[in-house]
Image (cartoon, rainbow, N blue to C red; front, side, top):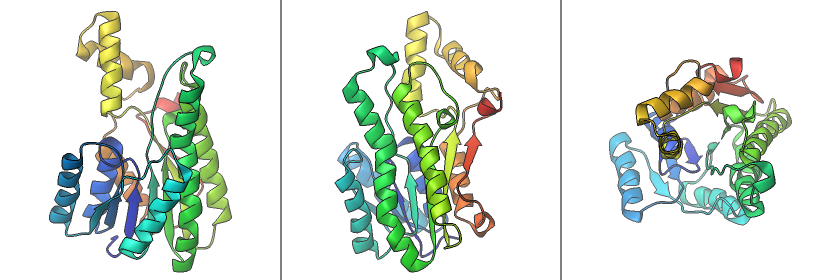
Length: 260
C-alpha cells in the first residue's frame, strides 16, 4: 500500500515508535529511524527492517529537543531518500511530580520533545508534501492529550497542545491532499511503563502482576495493554485511501480510558 512512500518516525529505536516503523515498512514504505540507544542495536534494527521488508531504512540521530535538528532531519531525509510523505511525531519523555515541585528544566525538556519537536517537523515537512500533493502527518499524543492525571503537568500540557496543533494543521491543509491526525494511546507496555509498574510494586510492596493490575485498573477498563503493533496498524490506516477524509481528529486507542 505504501510502496514508494518515505516515512519518518521519530523516537523509533524502541517501543511504540519501533512498532509503527515496522508496520509501515511492512506496507512497503522506506523508513527513517530516529532515537537514542546503543549504536550496534540500532544498526541491527535498521538492517533487519531492510532485510525483512525489502525497503530502504536509514537512521538519523537528530536530537528532538532542538528545533534546528528536527528541521534538519526532514531536510536530510529529502536529500537521502528524495522525498518525505509520512511524518510520525512519536518521540516523547516523561517526568512526574506535583506542579509546585516540578523542576523547571524538566518542564522545558518535556515541552521541547513532546510538543515543539512536532511543530518543527511539521513546519519543515509541509512544503515537501505540498509539492507532492500528498502527505500524512500523525502525531502520537496520548489519553493524556484528552484527559489529565495528577503529577503529570508537563506531559499533559504537551499532549493537549499536540492535539490542538493537530487540529490547526488539519484545518490549514484541508483539501490539499495532506491530512494531520493524532493517535491517543492508553497504557502500552513500553520500557517507560515497565518502570512505572516496578515503582508501584516497590512502593506498595506488591508483586509485579498486582502492580500491573493496579495500573490498568485505575485507568484502562479493558484491563489489557495496547500493543505497539496495534498503534502501527492505526497509523497505517490513517495513511490509507480509506482515511483520505479523516483530518484534524484525535483517535483514541485506549481500552475505554477516555470513555469514562
